Amino acid sequence: MQFIRFSDLCANGQAKGKKVFIRADLNVPQDENGAITEDTRIRASLPAIQMALDAGAAVMVTSHLGRPTEGEFDPEDSLAPVAQRLSELLGREVPLVSGWVEGVEVQPGEVVLLENCRLNVGEKKNSAELAKKMAALCDIFVHDAFGTAHRAEGTTYGIAQYAPTASAGPLLAAEMDAISKALASPKRPLIAIVAGSKVSTKLTILQSLAEKVDGLIVGGGIANTFMLAEGLHIGKSLAEGALVDEAKQVIEKMKARGAAVPIPVDVVTAKAFAADAKAEVKDVKDVQEDDMILDIGPKTAQMLAEQLKAAGTIVWNGPVGVFEFDQFAQGTQTIARAIADSPAFSIAGGGDTLAAIAKYGIEKDVGYISTGGGAFLEVLEGKTLPAFEILAKRAG
Image (cartoon, rainbow, N blue to C red; front, side):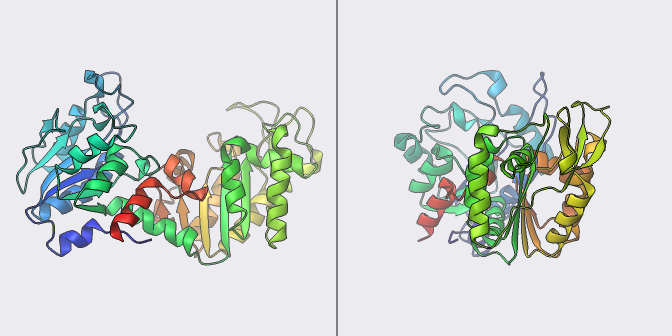
């Protein structure tokens, strides 16, 4: 994937004295009083900001926060708490600037935070008029918000069209490199784990991956639907009977390529979905009508673990069981440990996946942890993200 790296511009002295506009992802959770409850995204944005400051640039940073109504300011949509946290983390004052589209006063060596970009009329629909005004504010545009890379909006696409130079910040560049390594030129065998409650939300991903991967591991409610497709009984487990034909198509597509969708041979069941529900390990043919399948069984987990340990590349999206309840967590834990132990390059993404990685403390053993939810899923679907597309075009 061809794109201009902001780190190269800084290393070559091309950012010195220049106005740099950074689109960061500072959309952090807040409590009812507006206090930031978790600042991972702010911390993740620091390398690009510090890089620009160290290079002697005049730095402007913006982000969306929540879902404000364009053209209508509400105090709860303000980036003021973010400006305060950024000031603390950078050890310097970061002023918050409102009404910035018509012009921004910032000197080399200074950094300002531009108020919530989604307050600007035309941001969501990528108005050319707005994009041109924003592009006129800077010499270098830096996209560093992978979580927004699947949206063609004013600050994620339009400004990149018109800015004198458009580049990828360190966070976005790392995502682009990891995705390219995992999907564009993977070391084989390439194994994908796609798990979740519904096939419908991941159907296009499954269909796209079935054309690329050497093994497609399904988990959660998705696995239940695939079990139905193989003629197995799943009791009262969560599944989508209407999508059995689509699941069969994925299985057939894989078979035609000499690849496989491993179907569970044993499962962990309960009579109810509850934290105190009694777990029972059963062979798949012994599932009763009143059983709910809430995890893969130990034999299945071991079989999949062996496959993962022999992989060249692993793409992971979704836990394979209800890992929030310890009695249904063994499958996800076994998978997580196998990924950690595998010599394969691994890339993981999605909120529940990140929660599982944190629960089992394998952060350092995963090759790359993606920060984008929707963007990561769209990449797995085989889509070209708008941000990647425009940065590649501008690098040409």
